[in-house]
Image 1 (cartoon, protein in one colour):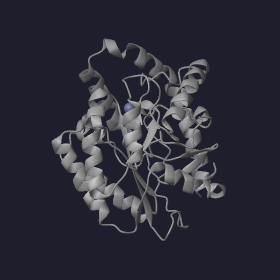
Image 2 (cartoon, protein in one colour):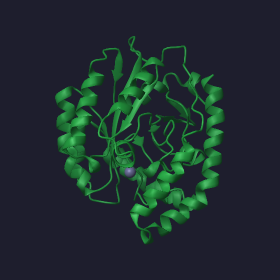
Image 3 (cartoon, rainbow, N blue to C red):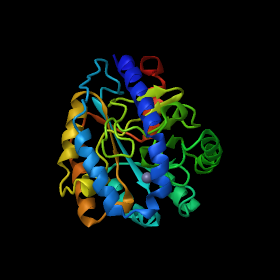
Image 4 (cartoon, protein in one colour):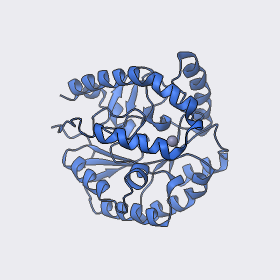
Length: 302
Ligand SMILES: [Zn+2]
């Protein structure tokens, strides 16, 4: 079931990539000439039409997770700029207080990433991943650009001891992502109409993309919740978490330290306290989930 679903969906994803490639290239080349509010307006307008596409309600019968746990819960952060770097301490403290750990994905060539910060995070039990190279939307521009950049990305991966990758703005070419030199990728939303490539892999379960474990982003990004939708609450996180838990899937969240303020930190804390009450949920670093899934490769390969 999952295999068939995955094959169908990834064909769709590849098709989406083909259709949007030229549009994205134009967008990222010229967007500096357009005011951000106009771009946000256009994106919101397009979104309304897109919400109506169908979302499959798939429940996998076998239990995927270890030790009798019912579902998985993963926290990730994409650090977009220096202001994000400055917020890391607060997020680390909040998560540690509640007994959580997460991964922080850094952009190697957009702002300085001190090696001391990487080492500190890892020694506190957090994980570090690579978030593209420059975050300029052009990683998949052409085969030559992709290969050159991936070679550099590989060096940062080794320097930081990372095993995970997330493509900036979830721009993704499914065929090329299969080749990245990482244990796992986390660049496909299960379903997200608000991203530059709207749509997603439609799976709340991890699966194999070539030799790479794909960990879909299954909870709404903080940016979309707080900024695009202007919400002052975290109900969409709680409701989707419940829905995924009932289906034995994986809840995976992106919170950007860059967009955090006291109010949003409070909502994030409240959500973590809520999740903590569920003793049957396996909270793990993405690296751990990917290692666990490798052992189950035969049933998940697409
Ligand atoms: Zn990003």
